Length: 375
Image (cartoon, rainbow, N blue to C red; front, side, top):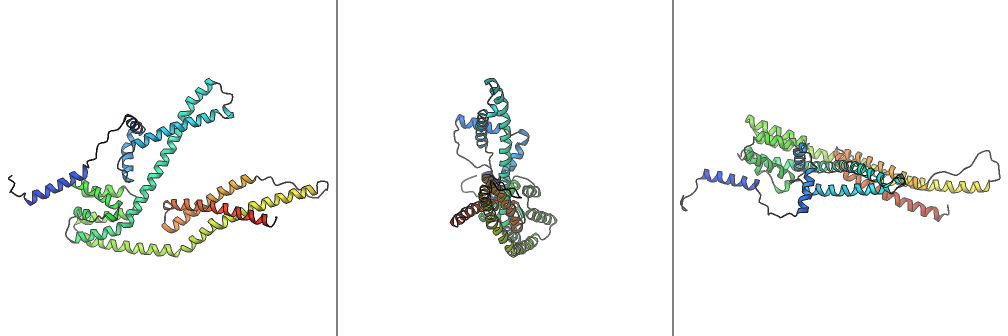
């Protein structure tokens, strides 16, 4: 073809689509040379993942918006767990339980004990990391649900403009939609590569625990395959979601008084009662000690003895009880506000810290009060 000739419109469009798909799927990254220590750490991190679970792990990380498996991070975690296991073993060998062990017994014990501790710590670390990923996926799902009505509004406009479903999906994403833009973009890439539209959308909806997104896309794909008026359907779903969002805000506002009451009881009243109980018990102990000293040589019809309660133990018991109360209250408030316990993890931290801090403040105030009146 000579420089003056023009590429036909159909061929130009095909070239643009293929170039776009190629650029989306093959992002060039600068090559960085890795040293041997880095490669060894990555190899160890790769080795701890069972082969049968690799696809599950990769899919789990993709759902949490982690594009690459952090093999290096896994390797560093293994190093830390090994060091921690050895430290626990050395600490145990210095206690009185291993005082009578000779050198051979200590070596044999360490050979058996260190792997057990390592795998136990590895199980705890794996479970903790899974909880972190679950929390991240849940947060991502909620963020997508928050902007989903606005996405449907854009989708409805594009469908009314005569665009196909794939084109309408791709043109409905905005930067403000965040995670939803990322997931819809991934769906469009799969469709351009030849995947079935229904299958690509189904894979997306099954990856997240969201009834709203799943049921809405089921309606959209079914309507599109049947040749129905999909644009009007999407518009009606958008209106219904807007009404649901408004009603949810009204319900949350109507139960605000219950949340305030629970917060006051947990953060103020409960710590104050425990702090007052501590000082009253201390007062009773002091009074009984004085009465016992006065009535040493006097026979009374009742036997007076000291209160055998350790102050330090009472403080630890109070702190544990207040932590349980705080976590329970956070769960209840989360259910009232959001309809789910999963969204209350931030409130659990807030209530726990605020309750313990309030307890320490009341302990100081009551201590000052009793000292001021010489009680």
